[in-house]
Length: 598
Image 1 (cartoon, rainbow, N blue to C red):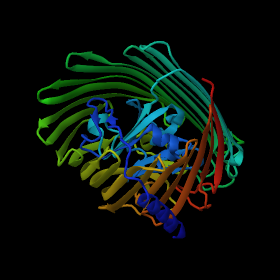
Image 2 (image 1 turned 30 degrees about the vertical axis):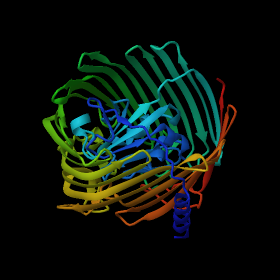
Image 3 (image 1 turned 90 degrees about the horizontal axis):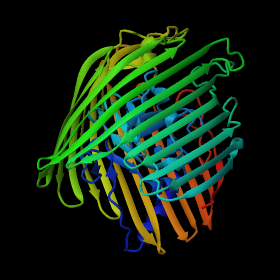
Image 4 (image 1 turned 45 degrees about the vertical axis):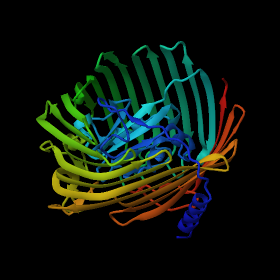
């Protein structure tokens, strides 16, 4: 409680002493796969993490960065995003979609691999978080929301070197280069290596990440590779003698184009995504129990937008083939076809209306129609009232369907999950002050979870219940000047209430441990030309009752071509667990130095 009072007092004092002059904020464009809109015109709740916010955040990786967003829940099993599950507004890790420049990174094996493909913060321009049903826009895996990672824009020639060293023998090094050969041709390449002895027994890791982006006229090629090797102590079991171990690899290659023909914009794309997961139940005895899964997804999509006197018409198709080779799940494949159509009417004076439908077809499941409607009313240039409703669904993963071991059994008879989601809200966006508030509701049926009737039984995947999820969230962002420098203050709060309508089993593994209360706040300040500091606070209380407080901080100094930084996480040594039986690390630091060669 003392910590909360001190932080609130500091924030209030700074605000009361702030000068009246403010900083002009740019209107941010939300880059959907079809209709791209300024955030002020979008009739949905969309959160944006800008490049400036990334630079000033105490977070050193995307997983930690997302923890500050209202309604977003990252349940980590270690440091530096080593293994984390992504949840939005109470949805589970299989119900949230991650995209990189609009390329879907879903994995047919399991949603546990969603975050395997995340990029280094050095390669990210911004992050767009779409909350609520996004199936009408992206397809079936965007059940509870979607996160689109927008890669770095290539603006100039540069060569950057970075070194980091921190707690638990955490060592990090990276090299990044950007070259603009002409106005029509440029390249970005980045290589990063990180390894640590771990903060507890069998939590060591070694990571390698490579990212390349090449642009030639209206063509863009992106390629990424992530290799992770890590001790997985009690990630999936409670037996301390097993010493679990895991290795994952994730690859992406995508070629996109952008054509403008009068009032028609055409964006075709081809892509290939690969994920490999190798798990050992006993690290020192691979023959005891070993799982190896390799999934590949090859796809083609094209998205088009036509501008007319009636507004914007978006349409597109996405065809993909998924292959899985697994010593546990077997050899599987499925053909996926998605088509999209949406019409935005934005010439209705102060009203905007967007109607849309997606048709989603899987070779092993029935075709689904996913309609949606967005409505908005501009009270003024800065104030907007909005609402939306949408139908969404998710097909079972191959793990849900076919996984088998002595304690778990998949279910090949599973049916897709489905839900109807509604939202109503208000947003005020000005040059220096932004405020959003929204109420949301989701009625889900046929939810899939691993269940059992007694502790002596196996866990089995089942369509087990209908769940009503309702809540609200609010965000305040204030940018001001103090001592002739820019300062920024953020406050976010999210509340979720889940109600099981007809659960017919006593034990479930993953469902209903939502963020009942989530409060985050951050302050970024600057009082000297070369020095910048930030502090963030997060309070979490889950449905099952566990709660905790976390404080992180960062100080960075820019001296000539050098940037020296110190990141401190969990500085008050909070004991907490985000998922399972994995305790998170207490206070830890990372010292970094970056040098811009040119």
